[in-house]
Every structure is written in C-alpha cells, then in structure tokens.
Length: 250
Image 1: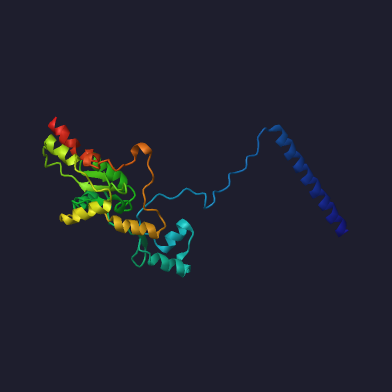
Image 2 (image 1 turned 90 degrees about the vertical axis):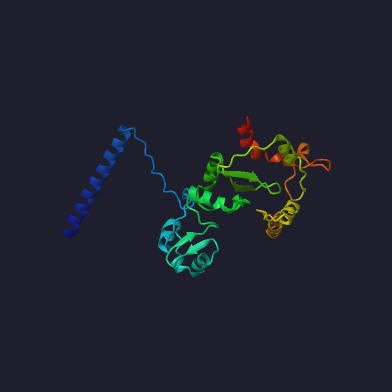
C-alpha cells in the first residue's frame, strides 16, 4: 500500500507539472514579447583603457586594476621596482618622468630655466596634459615652440614679453639670409665653438637610432621640396621669431 501511495503522489506531481507547462506555453503565445538575452559582460581585453594618471598604487591596487598579482610574482615585482621609469617608495609604485612636473606653472618655470631651449620630447611624459599646456603657453606668448631643422622635433624656448624690441628690416634680411650648414651636427659644432650649448645632441640621437634598428635618414620628400646644391638654407624657416616684432612695428 505504501508503494501505491507513492505512485499516486508521483502521478499527481506529473499532472501538476504538465498543467504548469501548458499554461506557460499559452501565455507566451498571447504576449508578443521577444526574449532578449542580457548582454555579455565585457572581457578584460575588451575594456576601454583607463585614463592616464600619475598616481601611486599599491600592489593590491595594481592587482584590482589590471589583474596582475605582483606580490606573488617576484619576477614582475623586481622588474617594476628596478625599472628606470618607475618610482617605488617601499609601498607604492608610480611612473617616474624625466622632469617632475605637475602643472602648467611648473612647466613654465622649467622652460625659463633653459634659455638655450629644452627638447619637447623630454617633457612629453611629465604629466597627461603637458602637450596641451605647452600649446597654451605658446598661444599666450610665454614660450616659443620651434622645430629642430634636422629631426623636426620641437624645442621649447622661454619668451619674456616684458622686453619688447624693434629690429630693423635690414637686420631681419641679414639674419634670414645667413647660410646654414646642411647637417645638424655641423650647426651644433658651430654653436659650441661660439660658447653656446646646443639643445640637441644629433650624434647621440643617430647612434641610438642605429642601435634600435631605426634609420637615421629623413623620409624622402617630394621632388619640388628637394634640396639641391644650389639651394641656400637660411633662417627664413623661422618666421615666428619676428611675428611679434612685425606687429609691434606696424
């Protein structure tokens, strides 16, 4: 009798389940709702990169951000600690730029310490918005940004608008008509002969490029821009030096 009761109970459960399934199917036919699967969670590799910062992070914070447990990986920990571009204070890791700058005022103060010019490439990693601040300082007339003739790299020079001067047109023509050496190394050598320190070291840069497998030759230019033996290289490629002077005179 006990077995028969169990069988009867099982049949009732089956009938109840069948009734439930039938009612669900009927309700799905009435409603016009479509099932939309929930979007899959983005994978770690598909996540947008985090904004650049100069904050200091503990190993635990690094693990939370990039899922790398450097505490349990001695090779990674030692590699970070000994990296020339990483500062470790015993607890936190942070990026170490060539110049410890935090904002535009510190940037301007540094540029003014280099009257002979400072390479922009040495400032690029100071803080995330340093390039925007350089352009803002240039627009405000507080610095000059001039391109290196050999490598087309920008050099930042301090500008003091409190010392307005007027230059005669004859002197401008004389300056622009000075023939320059074709190789930047020769220009740097001439500067050194005259007691001036070049802001660049072309020989060192070319040697570094060769070690890294990069060609030190400039990209070929279009024919109409090629420099021939009869072409004179002059200071006419520096018009920004006289822009304010021309405006003041007019």
